[in-house]
Length: 138
Image (cartoon, rainbow, N blue to C red; front, side):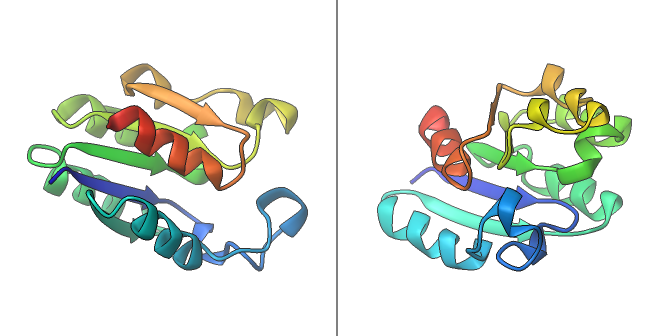
């Protein structure tokens, strides 16, 4: 059974209550249950942290024995060389995801430090971006 980790970064614990016009009104925990039901043949895990170092530690933990990581690093996408280095250091393929189309937003969101070290990038499809990322890993 393939093991895939979905990992969310800062402020994504507030999905369903923050900026609903951008991120929608569903919590990620609720959506994760939908994903688990759809992909019963996969071993799906979910992790969220608002702390950069904890996200890096989790990548190191799973990065040599999981089959894939779906990563929404939130604002760290645009600022974290350390997360980019952690992705480059592991063997597990990482797919970068974003709920919104970051290229339709503020200019500082147009650059990702992570993308060059990821298998691919999926953005702008709402929460369905996560499902598309899982599909790319299987």
